[in-house]
Image 1: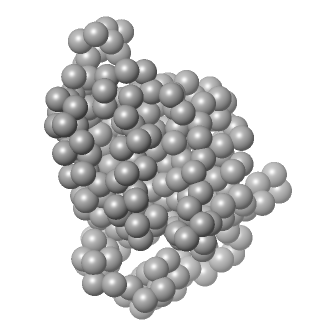
Image 2: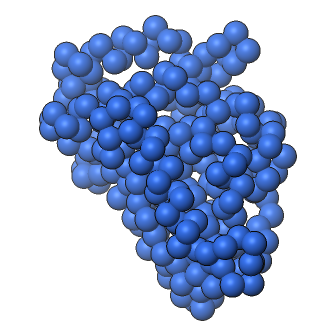
Length: 263
């Protein structure tokens, strides 16, 4: 029984950042005599917010179709989605009708709403995001470099290799559309109707999405678990790749073995 996985990147990054974890899971799957297929999605698939969401939905539907009919669990494969940051927000925004057709969802450094609101104190001030957007329009390379430093401190070469080439005008357009998604999306309404396990991983030192957002997300889920790494920031899968592989393999063990996952 094969496991189909969709990996969804965060803003400004190629989904290749998940490649070490994907390779690790492939090895684990082979040890269990269960193949693992991977599909990667990043935020260069469209130049408008609407086009980006359509492309993400298309990718998820394609993975589900490859797995087969959910009504016949003995014959179909399993589907798991791993989504980071903007990817997590966008996947959650697809809603229960689509997400309840998969077997497990992994949220890394994610939130159901990026901006602060009267009933959501766990996000950015809208004015801060607007200032960031304006700086990015005027000086994309400089602004993106500052963003990388905010996330990682001193940016290692390994991180620079998986960052999207924002000097490219087409990538800039996609990045602007991604920032609009951060501004617009609010996935909170459908969380209580999700009927699949969600595994949330968050770094206590996350400077982009506060830990309180992950805690509030967990509280709204019928099925879910929250793991907090005290010595990680916004990108635990990049900061601690070996630990991430071990944690992910444990979280998805039953999915990989063909059983029903449990949070």
